[in-house]
Length: 246
Image (tube, rainbow, N blue to C red):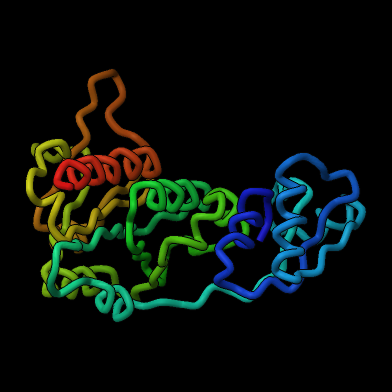
């Protein structure tokens, strides 16, 4: 784990054992002080090392003078996501599925907005897609500690299973005639937002599985947003609808 906010959230969440935290000799500021204090509370070793040594061990471009060694995230699957869908009661599942997103910065940004909007789990394809890496974790600013991330061997079949469990599948596509802002009651039911890869959009098989395909109204000269911006708008549209029912 690399980056000040990512390491701070790692320690705050307390979900994974942290073996040690490395800090560059010249790393300082309130965030670094918080990390040292949290590590002390968790009885985690903190070592000061030369910045060049820390950066030589880092796997992201800018670790901000902070690096933590921790137990890897547990791998979740589609069964784990299905098990978390309430079968009764007022609580409704809020899921996001990403179809072939390959840019780590975009995935990190998507995970960060999913945490903010109250998404329960994010579903990623096992193949031809980026997964959690130090770069993703840093871009997510600690969101990987709070949002469940599951891998699906085949996304179309995983979506079919979600649909069978009573989850509405809402795909986003620039060419769709229905507006994202017209989801109505769907947004307050069990729902999974399905977003496509950068440039390519939703694959044919994934699009065919969606119950509804909607677009984000574009009022300027550009025709689309990148996947992280689209995810932020869509997630918060669902969050807005759900807040209105409380």
